[in-house]
Each structure stands twice: as structure tokens, then as C-alpha cells.
Length: 101
Image 1: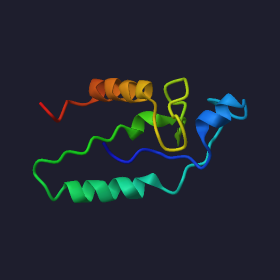
Image 2: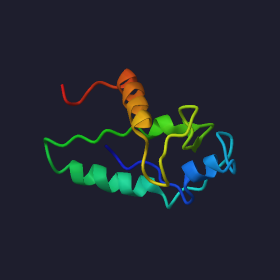
Image 3: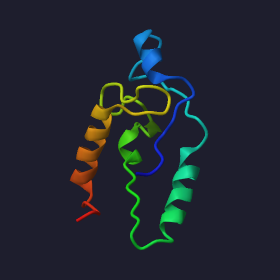
């Protein structure tokens, strides 16, 4: 899986403290697309490596959000919940073929 967005403040703690919600902008840590591009370039050197990038599913109104599925997707600033990963996989494979088949 490609690099996914990471946040400057913990979305889970922010949400639990009622300091942020699905409509709020939460600043990201650096530009994760640079890391994603590095991963794609390195993977391209090998015939048996495929990068899956579901990050487009995390956009709402043109911005990345830790609330893309309608509820909180992260345990902390950089780790997604299992529920969110399952949601991303389900949505991704509705749009794309499975590269492992």
C-alpha cells in the first residue's frame, strides 16, 4: 500500500475532546505524495511489486480528511483503524481490479 496521509495533530484525540469533527480541516504532516512517489519509483524497479494507492478515497471536497468514510479513520496521527482499512479496501476494489489475481 502506498503512503497514506498523516496529520499534525492526532485526529482521534481531537475528535474525542470535541475539538474537531468531519467538517474541520486538520493540517497534514508534509506532503505525503512525495513519499508515495518514492515508493512508486522504487516499486517500478521490480516486476513482482505492485503499489496500491487508495489515498484518493480520503478526499472530500478536494482535501484529504481523516473523516472520509463519514466517521473517524485514524487511531492517532499516522495509524488507521482496522475498520478504515477494510472500508478503503472495499471501496478501492470496487473501483480497481485486484493486482494479486
